Length: 435
Ligand SMILES: Cc1ncc(COP(=O)(O)O)c(C=O)c1O
Image (cartoon, rainbow, N blue to C red; front, side, top):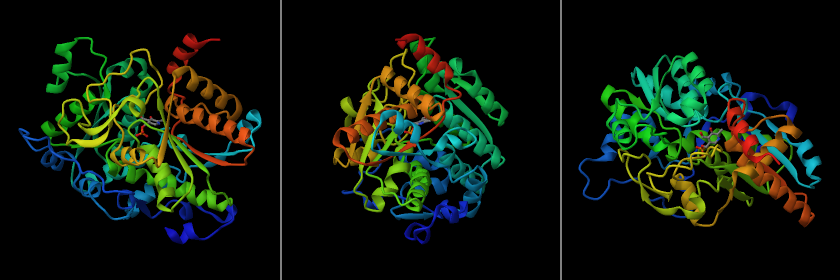
């Protein structure tokens, strides 16, 4: 990989095979202090860590605990990456720059260019690949907005696996088109909470009209995988997912180098932290001096109000506890909020880097991200996913700051997805925030 990273090449000489890396980058050995490991709760009735062995593909679990800095991408996975159009484009947002009259140069890595419309497919492909290679016939997962579910449905079909997706009920009802795509790829989709798992039944007994949450859907998918002897594919938060997502940052680094740029500021939105880690961590691996800014919603205030402590990734507590910034596993976001990024915790490696002050954070309110999404749509023509609009808002603020400081900074951000299937969210925002 450093073969291509180390050499300066003119953009026209780059072909896709030069840009898509041969290794994933793992930040764990480069963290400023050791990462607190996943653990079983004290005095637990059963071992969650042992349970992981039953629910995750073995190779994925092995890679979750690896301390190697680079992990070889299997040829078949790299081939799939190329086949879905990787490398994704790195574009310069000139019209946005002009509109803001900023001296800053703004680049964005466009992960919305994948067939499923977001970065999530980068982590779904290797997990489906390993599951299939281990002789598994079917996989399950949860999904909130539907981006991860869509990615799993496609990756599963690529490798001839059946898939079942537990989709948070409110999204299931508000986003019927996401369900349609998953069905087209061959997946079964259920509105969570369902009554075919204990976790689902418990939630329904508390409230028969329970809107669902990512934490509950996760518990349901895990429980279902156990019952069916299928495997569970994990979409964010665990560090192995950030490892798979490192293709984003590795490609970006090569692409920026090809145009003679070095970033001063790197920005990404954070749900569980996978697109942010995938985008920004490879630059840390290269020893970047850039400022890193993680962006989240003020409505799900895990940066400002979260505690850095051991908590469960899922609501029922079937998965091992991990040390992370968290609002608590039972957190349910405000019902009206349509901006995405609703997960209660932050990936352990990213949480640690935030504790250390190496990664800054911002939280924005929904009307602010709506304005930013509108500005980006009008100037660049791409409707961002509501999640990604959080990053766009921080980019606008940083571009204005560069203007005040009179500095030609290079700002690079990850546009994690497009919003073409999130138009109902924007419809809701337009109604509520009309000026
Ligand atoms: C387009 C998009 N961006 C960002 C996220 C946040 O997840 P993560 O922080 O794992 O990248 C999601 C989650 O569903 C998403 O769909």
